[in-house]
Every structure is written in structure tokens, then in C-alpha cells.
Amino acid sequence: MPPVLAALIDDGSITLVAIAVLLVELVFLWLAARRRSGMRFAPYLANGLSGLCLILALRAALLDSGAGPVALWLGLGLVAHVADVVGRLRRS
Image (cartoon, rainbow, N blue to C red; front, top):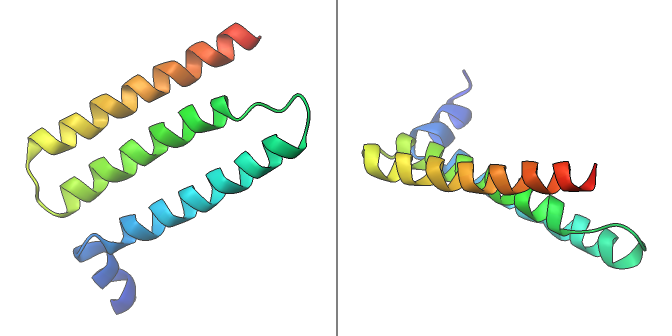
């Protein structure tokens, strides 16, 4: 593994990169939803929140924060995921 990548993983910085990419994606989707009729942003937001919680759970694990914070972020991710799935089922 390249030393730069190993360093990003060791100190948890890789998760900050992932969060930045996710936020850029959400901003792009929000702008697209504003410009297109019929495109709703809420489903993307629920999916993005689910992903964000998983990234934060990974960050907590990489930083040795203990089981509590990891479980908290995973639980919040589950709530966001359920909201995403329920929204998809209602639209289908």
C-alpha cells in the first residue's frame, strides 16, 4: 500500500475525503433537482445521510473511539436507510 494512503487510513483522514466527495455529490444533486421538474431531492438526501453515517462509523472505528460511537453511527445509518427504502417503496 502506498505510504500516503496508509497515512490517510491510519489517522482517519480518508473519511474526511469521502465526506467531502459525498457533500459535493449532494450539492450537485440538489442543484439538479432545482433545475429539473419532477426530480425530487429528498430521496438523495436520505441515501446521502445513510452513507454519511456509515462513513462516520468507519471514522470512529479508525480513530479507536470505542464501540459506543461506532454503534451510534451505525444505528443512525440504519434509520436513514430505512427512511430511504420506505420512500422508494412509496414511489413505486
